[in-house]
Figure 1: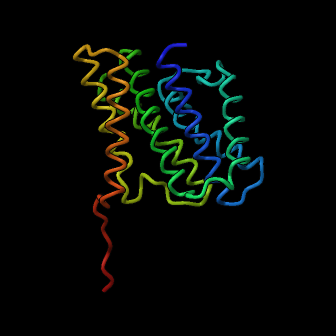
Figure 2 (figure 1 turned 90 degrees about the horizontal axis):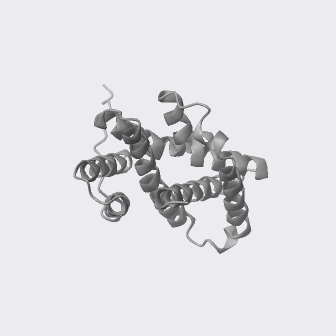
Length: 204
């Protein structure tokens, strides 16, 4: 298993835990927790594969990933009472998953010789849309539609990876640099309350 495969699996675990914690917060049953964890971990990748015609989708040929998701769900349930800062835990796991899956999507686009802009879109889709599906199932407004810097962090990471790749940087350096950039952007945005502007319609 190469470095990229390890990163991909860590992203899957991070997103699965993020989904499981959100479902636990919503007081879902075990089945609901697993479903939310599953779609959070794999939803973006499934959409990506369908869009580029890569079927059957990735996880169907790598079924062991379901075992990792199941273990992640079990750990989230068992240690739920030891997670004192649930919001912070969700943020940490969600940010790690976003960074790693952004790389995954971009790299698949690059490997398929797609246009760099298309590869960036695939990175954003892979990184963000599992969380979108999670939030919808948990009756939340998806995070990418709120003021938080989320999709923009994914975009910055995807562009960073494309640039480093085009400059023939070492693959491991490209991965680590992209992950660091996404995490730093998310942390700084939340720490200092940086957000995109919102607009309202004034009532007459």
